[in-house]
Image 1 (spheres, rainbow, N blue to C red):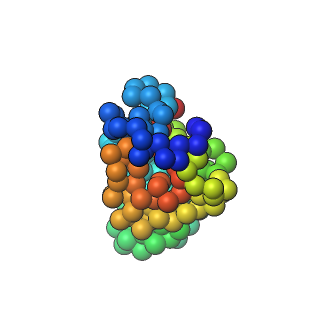
Image 2: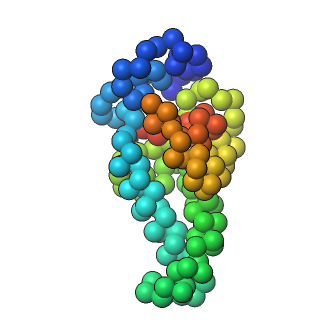
Image 3: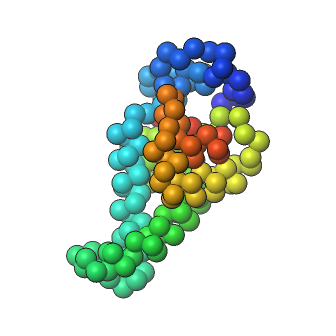
Length: 149
């Protein structure tokens, strides 16, 4: 995507992403919250299963699931950083048809941007505070946006 610095101040809001030069519908457009939450849920469940397996608990063990919450967060962070850095998407994002892209408004190298974005996402609050373009604080700090494939 090109450099969009200053674009949001000059371009009036018409739909999610227009101030960043993104289309209103179809590939490259900003997905809705439902699609993004479904991707997050799929990724979290996968990481929870991996953490539970590493901890030696079974999928039906509630004590094992509770005990694997912190390890699952660590698995999620590593999983997200690696897959987003290499492919711009995770398995959950890929299933629902979304990816993470740079906006050009932050001079961070891609791996650093993905690490910052993921660590802020793990804190939850930055992700639930978002603007009209559906960019959470984690995306704004990293200079990224989620878009449809």
